[in-house]
Image 1: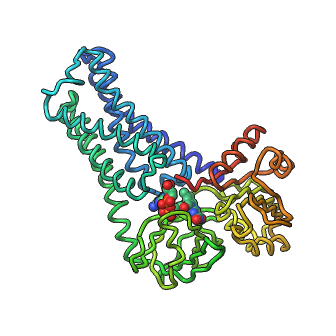
Image 2 (image 1 turned 135 degrees about the horizontal axis):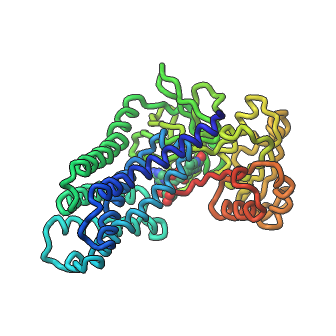
Image 3 (image 1 turned 30 degrees about the horizontal axis):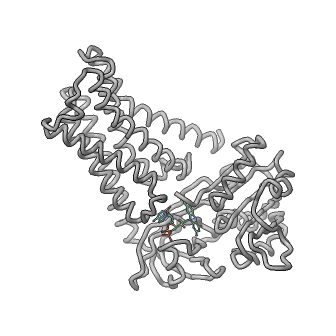
Length: 445
Ligand SMILES: Cc1cc2nc3c(=O)[nH]c(=O)nc-3n(C[C@H](O)[C@H](O)[C@H](O)COP(=O)(O)OP(=O)(O)OC[C@H]3O[C@@H](n4cnc5c(N)ncnc54)[C@H](O)[C@@H]3O)c2cc1C
């Protein structure tokens, strides 16, 4: 069995496990209590709450950045699933009192103020989850700072879990069943234990073994490469080219300490160094140039599936990079160069202006080297007079010219700003390039 087949099987098993955990309380209660004495709608409403609470608890596992969870799918797919399940769980939980009220005509559940405290806890949990999912969906559009949102997200998630737990244990009609009581305790322990591990224990373990910044090199007017080394006596983690890691810089000097993901732009052929090339693109990254050799950083990884190494059956490739989206491509190209991989690579690299092109010299050296057999096309939105490369943005016309010759046999790797990625991916899909030959990495969450 190949690694890919093993990963697929493992991913399938994880999906089955998720479905089994969500359905288990519904099926078990349904078997033991198939005569409920309630209307069909009431029973559906009750079951939706059982499934919804289980999904809320499992959200903690999905967001804990466990490598055993993300390995077969990639972190972005796991995040997408986490977001989608938040919406589904919210729909289940909102439908729960509505269907019960409609089914058995118990409208007091919805509007009566004179209900037990456990019903009130359920109502608060419901309002919290609804408000939170809406807020999270529109966070960027509302201009809410990511770090602020993350703090609120953590607090709201725990509050929803605990309130919903107490509500269901007290108000739920089936919690006289020992199986359900223990299942609920198990879910609560799983969720809170996972949160404690990822928010307290893991950071504490990482803080005991900080990495050291070895070099900070300016690449362009707003982009820096930071090279990191693990503490003496510790080997850095193994990774594939194109994967990313999380870094928390601990620089002191009143500089912010936040966890961010960045691609490992160095090649795995580097023995001890893991480097990231970081563009000043927001509040935190605006301070990246103030990082100094000798500063500490907490580093953990690797994550992600955006690497040609996960697709050993592929031959020649096309890389389409926009702006800082070049970093995973660079890691893959460096790896090919260092391992003498002579496959043909067509790189289309778009930027706003010439001064934004990262790794320009190294790419040009690689082009004249033997491995890989690289052909680079630079494209600029705002070229200077006399620019000899491509001009404008990737559109139908330029994609027809630059990408069409490779449609039949090559795999495509795409990473860059969302509008560019959307245009390229739509263009490839419209031309029936099979999904297995299209790989994309999004830097936006
Ligand atoms: C898989 C992956 C690989 C990436 N690789 C690179 C790379 O090689 N080079 C590079 O320059 N950038 C990379 N990024 C983007 C980088 O993570 C963001 O540019 C950076 O987090 C922005 O932080 P900021 O606070 O400066 O920007 P802000 O303007 O404050 O935030 C901009 C956006 O970045 C995201 N963001 C902000 N803070 C965090 C955080 N703590 N954790 C997660 N996301 C956050 C949010 O979506 C936010 O809306 C990568 C992103 C991902 C998802």
